[in-house]
Image (cartoon, rainbow, N blue to C red):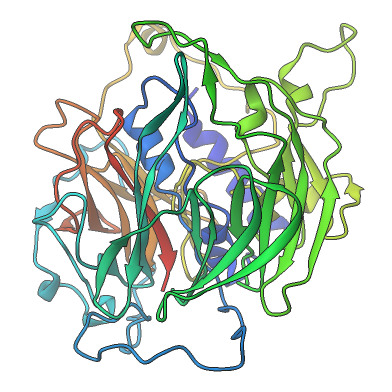
Length: 469
């Protein structure tokens, strides 16, 4: 049984139960952002694309000091949303999923709607100039790496490059963690050595930082969907530290650490509230930070207890996530939470809902049983066909496939008719070699956005942070 029938049924069920909010795509964008590779010796391209986690939202933070940011050079590439109105696309029709996946024709940005306002840097990898298309821009990227802190120990030491709207290029920084608010005006940053004891709000135009002291140590930052608050995860130690690394580097232990809780920081006032987590998490899953729900009303924590066998056979299942309101109170998940309010919060970077809310691309967490089906002997014996790299777009109302793209992964919607994601190089001989690209919904047209990103599973590779501009 493939995932498609489950996704289709789940989407049909959601369509019958509730209207999809038109801004759900913006909520989903905020639910997906970078995650620095935390200690995997190897990392598949899907994980590299996972690191290309998407951010976005409806509102930028209010000005912190009452003065507008410095004006940018009008000759530099604009990072704000394109001025041209987005075109209205006809409703897509179902496609034949048994037919071959279309091979896209490479086109220039001039052959696409002007409203996409495409900016590319195909000659550099990592990029030096702004990459953007439609609603989405590469706001920053990091180059993965490690730093020795002892004879047989190290920690993550990735280098972040942040977009500078004054020059239209990316500038190397010394921050350990970065997240950019929707609108590309502000970034939340943590200092190099983790855990940090303060969070910075950086004005991307002036490059000035306002520091806010925190009552507990900080290891991760994430803007809320509306860009008004920052979620700061707290660990007692840097969760990326490895100890007892073998001589060949193939084995190690994670340094003991514990997830303490989370801060909610009001970006305008600088007020901070800390709330302790209920899981008392430690061990393998400690590196995972807290996350926003898609609508920004809940904070979600992965529950390590869900990874352990039940205490008694046939006992009650343990929830995969714990839910907190913004005052830190635990609350049980409702049907609405399970059905779509937060479901993309742990997505591995898929595009999710389209801007208009009618289409969906990505994995779903359907909470329904797999429908019964009888398979013929021929079907059971026939090996599944390998379509190669493939992504699909579904109609939310019907669950039918309405678009297929020859892509490794699509990570964001540029507009209702185009997606941004990773395209294999050549004939996809190596899944670790790819480029960022803009592809049409029907998969027929593609524009290169970046240069070639090779060996994405290795340290030294670059991973973009996509943000709504």
